[in-house]
Length: 224
Image (tube, rainbow, N blue to C red; front, side, top):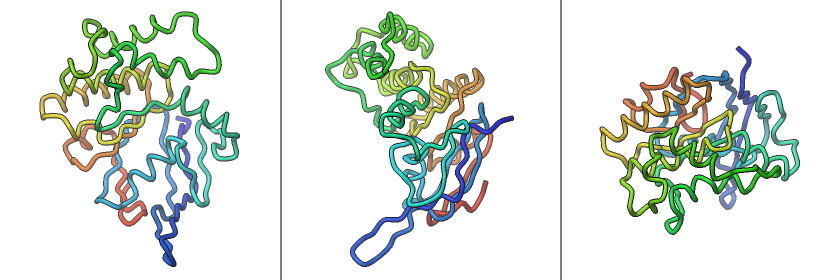
């Protein structure tokens, strides 16, 4: 199977005064198309930095990132923006929904940042909400939804553009156990449908739902 993600000797450094801090240290890995991968590690291990690089939100200090054989960080800012919008979906622990917009409007937002406009973006947003089981709640604002429903809206927003790669940063951290399990089941269904899922978590029970777990410590991979 062809790799969707290839990281080749990725380093990420930050300067704090006279000190150099290594957020990522010589990270190399491959993630195949259609995999479900968990990233685990203690606080400060580099999980969030790695996810930001995978999501084209941050540049490494050195190293190479290939997304489906495209060398990501030699691209223009316009092309990077297009990659984030079209090929990568993001899910966050705290949902990051706009409070005054309905579920349908929140899900539809990424569609309006496409370079090529869609003929009927509302229909596509509606279909994404139906896919995550919220067809009957699309006209509710976030305050009218439970935590699990808000996270389903966030999942719908992440998949509405038909991405190849879904990045989830502690997506179940704010949910109770039964709601957590429902969201993990939904992510599993999306992965079975062909989406590549990379999930950051500190919860070993959540990581157990993935095909494999990448373990980080002090910016380096210690298990893969």
